[in-house]
Image: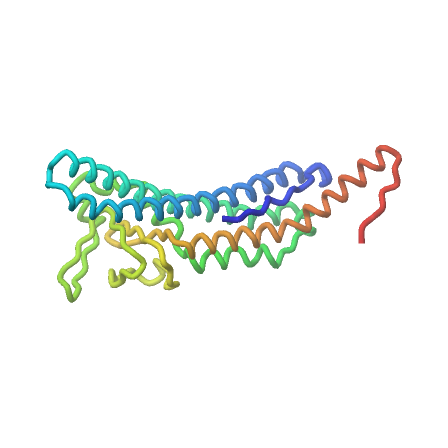
Length: 263
């Protein structure tokens, strides 16, 4: 998770006609960092909950099945598993929101010409490719998760949104969702539906129209989002410095003070 502070743009230093758009840019840059933090928090929650789930497995085996102690341990482990599911679903939503905010920044910055001229545009241009390498399909996993129950409420819908594949181990049918570790492969994902980058996290597979899409929750994903936020922050940092100097100089002039110009 990034520990940097979002660049502060002195919006009042910009031409009046650009100020509202510039305020929106400042808001989007902060939102980008917020969604990065949400994804990192989801990863931390999943790590904690998954370890708790694993720790409780031998605890269940200590007790007589269906006894009170067994029931408590079983229910606690089920809660830990639900927290894992909650974390990975929120991660998928965070990636979806991060993608749209990043797109808004990339397009919107060019519509604030004075601000754009002050930015380090090369850094901004690095942000989207870095994101897409790790998360090439940020939209469909979110859509599949959001409509999971809707896709299953009738037999026709369930069949339409189920994934079936023959493997050396027999036929696999996935209806709804399936969570696996990073080493699980062989589901026959269509080309371009997921990246081939290695990672050490977990994957939530969801069905949409008979095809599997995946939402990744991993330390590598956290590092990717941090790098994207760093690129965006670095892009806006020169503009933050320049607008602060412009605002300070204007304030000094209003007080009749000669303000020394920077290098």
